[in-house]
Length: 494
Ligand code: NAI
Ligand code: MG
Image (tube, rainbow, N blue to C red; front, side, top):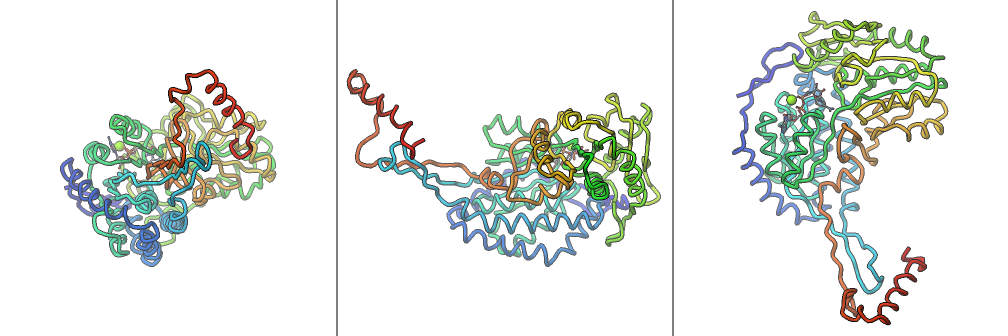
């Protein structure tokens, strides 16, 4: 049995049985049987329980706001972001999946003679391995498209946030999802997580880059597809023509959402020198007035870190930087008077490459600010990272900002917003480049990755045999070559 502790108080919250390899295999076996029947149902029929799930999440949000807060220690408003996210993603895929999954006509080699159809088949059993920082979002929003595509899902959440996953299972059952199509296995990463990678037909992983590499290697060994959404050290650029007040508010949201425990959160702030002093003064003032709190209510701007390990990591990053001469402009200390894992929202200047938090993901409420002089320098600074998940650009010239954004090595770039514009625009793909991951969620990619493409080509009238013995005759080959050459000039074939 694993004891889950509540971060607000570091007291017991619940006990979980631990699934090992055998239990995971049983769950995947049951899922595979259920998936066979589910896959035969038309997509429109599969949308029905998920549409009801969407309504239930909104209707019963108070239950899950409590559970998410109790498990993660985040502020209630940050938990609500997860509720909103699940509603947005579910609504989107429920309406788009039938069209995106329908068989598609493709052009034949010689139109009219070959009739080609692309069919999308489910993978079978999708294994989802999720972290503790956004348990409702990351437990549900990859699940919904996987189910709509005709798969069963086995979810292995982080042990810290398994109760949220169990609530998702209860809601999907109440919404009428057939039995065994969605199962939760409670367990350790190296045991239950690895067993799931070994048994599932596709893996959707969200978590640290280090674990992502282990999961990808293991899946690769079985030739099982995997998408990985990993860490970030995300940069925000405030250009000289930015709206200062809005940029400060954006930096607050971007740096401290879910106490900075967000893969897309801003940890590096680059501000044009003409705005730098004014920005810093205003930002530090606003940060100093953020309210920390541990209530299951709307009274706090910021909650706790989720675990003792998170507190140790964040404290370690800040202490290392202080020892190496950083300037602490705001925060910088743990707050045991509020709760055991609280840490103040922290603003640093004078961060140098020798400090751990210069390149490493802190995953806490800590942001480094530094000035820049030219747009080129800002892009260079933003790209000087092994990560490439999210970035943010602030400018009144949105046309120029889009050009600048395209030069940034990141899977999403938000202009005049820190992360939520791109994240919530779920019709567009989201994911990372470089060490931030592989593959995408959201958009067409986020649905079709859970399918195998099958091409069915029907040949009419004349067989298509380009290696027949007659090709060896010079005259025949001359004709064939001329036809191939002419095809380039037929508009419909180009
Ligand atoms: P983690 O990456 O180890 O855990 C994520 C999930 O993977 C959990 O469900 C875990 O049980 C599972 N897992 C662990 N080892 C596994 C294995 N060998 N095979 C299969 N599954 C496995 O992250 P962790 O340890 O919770 O956090 C450590 C650091 O990772 C954080 O301080 C933070 O920097 C980073 N992190 C980043 C996230 C992001 O969204 N970018 C999310 C979570 C953590
Ligand atoms: Mg770990």
